[in-house]
Length: 261
Length: 301
Image 1 (cartoon, rainbow over the protein chains, first blue to last red):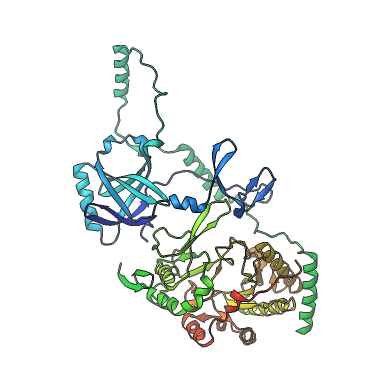
Image 2: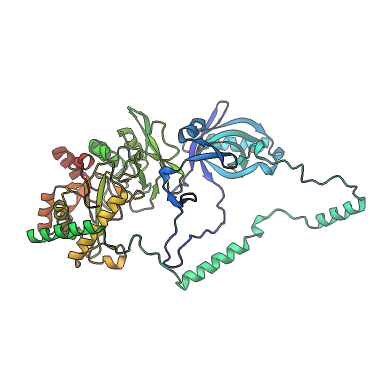
């Protein structure tokens, strides 16, 4: 089966429009666990709790509030949120072509691949090739799941990559981070330069792996083999008499049913 | 991939891979599936209307990988009606509503062979329109045993003042529906009631019926699954195709017919194929229509 895209549409600029699908390019190595009750291994579920009334709140009693000052909120309805959502769109519209070297990696958010859809293969190849030769990236706007993203489309090894970028106002200022200017001795500078030069290598990410993840997966595989599994009970199993009135009525009806058969 | 364009009232639809055989051991293409749903549309649409659809998609055919889609795909055409439904964590999810023929055909073009819907409408997710008993046979019990249990269940419900309706699941079991159609009935009500009914049935017919979900309890018995009476659960929609070897459908049966079938003793005779389904609806109309309109109240709660 072909890779399932998370979005499909066209990538376009001036008169070019190429049908593409967006597929995710990374699968984070995070190992996730379910939370279970230690007594019966039931999967625990999250409920919303009202600390004031000390009760669980059902979804129809939940609304949104934006905190203006502590404990003071502006309420926001679904309709109001909807009214500011961008129109759903089927295009990745390239606004300008930029040099990727100018983009500080701080701006990089999440990477995807763009895959040509049926009929778009030739135009896709052409764009990949021309972008590779000119060494430019397309800067585009694009709506995914109710949000408008700024994205960079780049050409890498015969395919198009798309990376969502942070907006500039999301980047925090670094002014408090760099210390005041101090005088630097030439000798100190040279020494550090040499140490760095001695450690220069080609970037080979395959050399590194998440050690904890590897050990964790091995441990899980061992435990599965040893069959140290616990089983969650089927839900709602507690044998319980229903409301006494109902049970009595059912018993009476059942007696008549049996008489009639 | 081959494409065919059809113009419909709602807009132009591009249908893909119509020649693909999605029931390879029987021979039933995507075009056949679309044709089935087009012809059954008049009957199935009222049962899908305003309910959050769960797509169960079989892009490579019924024996192969499938996936569930509860969220309405973001690549949907603009005219597909949707609803926002609250989830347990308080977040909203956008779901598809199949309220017209265009949307039905669009969903089928995604190879959503099976259409699953909740017992409540999207606008009132806490109010089930019906209470359901999902009768599921544990091997070597069969649909025949389900039929016998369904008849007892019908009588019991009738003594409780409730009219019920039955349909095949299109697989191995039967579904007994009790229409409610009242604003004041909650899932808590239907769950309490159906659980008590299932437990009474188990108590009086312990060799045949179980109300317990645990697999080992279900062997050779009919499991009365009352836990389907929950806002988070979905049921196969009446008239939906099932993704089995053959294109069987979940189809309503008259109680009189079920009595006959139970007497005949052949589990195969319970099953309704796509063509038989079309023939019967043309002859008898929607035997499940009352499930959508009949008002009944659960007493003794």
